[in-house]
Amino acid sequence: MIVVAIAAGLIGYVIGKPAPPQVQAEKPDPPEEPAFVKEGLVAYYPFNANAKDESGNGHDGEVKGSALTQDRHSNADSAYEFTVEGGSHISIPESDTLRPQKMTLNAWVYLSQEGADERFTILFKEESVQLAIDNTGKLQKVKNFFGLNRGGFGRWENLEYMGRVPAGEWFMYTATYDGSTMRQHLNSQEICSRRFAGAVPYNNSHKSPFLIGSISPSRGNLNLANKLDDVRIYNRALSAEELKALYDLEKPKK
Image (tube, helix red, strand yellow):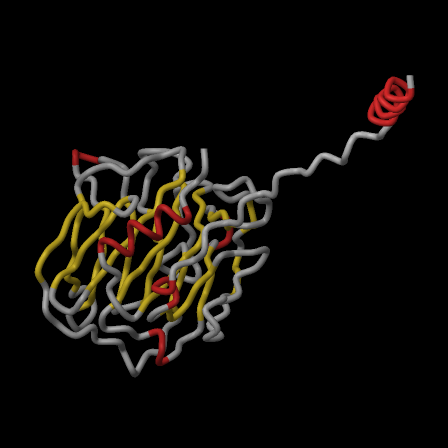
């Protein structure tokens, strides 16, 4: 009888005891940024509600007519939209550290449409460097190009990619120069290259700004509502392995 009573009491205690609190699974930490991402980084524009340089080098951009918009991860005010209105662009003041000889120019790009009337310039420095997309296909001549000046007005060494790039979706577009070879990459995959060995002749007599989104402070792009995000300028050529790791780190998560 005593054993039965004790057992009954234990059952009652167990039944009446409140359930232990459920432990929620912790969210996984975001991937750690590899050390190489900062090596040789001259300027970095993640466009976190502004055009400040987050490389630590102080190359803050001045926004002219461009509007903040949603980025590829659906974050508000985390990318910039460039339009025909008022010479839309971002201007980065002249600096000796923004005159790389070896380089990587990297950006996430969104084209609103395929086949507009004019190229969309990603980065441009007068008589020095240019990276632009011409997705029009006029007369079957698509020319997406990375250009290095060879000394003087109109003297450009252009690496041209004759294929199309996506419209209506984000993609990572990259140009590299290691002192002997120019390359273009789409979503970290090399799409074209050419040999070129020469110094980039930055014009000392005319200290022009580095421009994002246009070739001129007074002239916008005719392509409507194109977007840029995470613009990077390096003073070295990132390797194919590094570009693949950067793409995997920053690509939109499905």
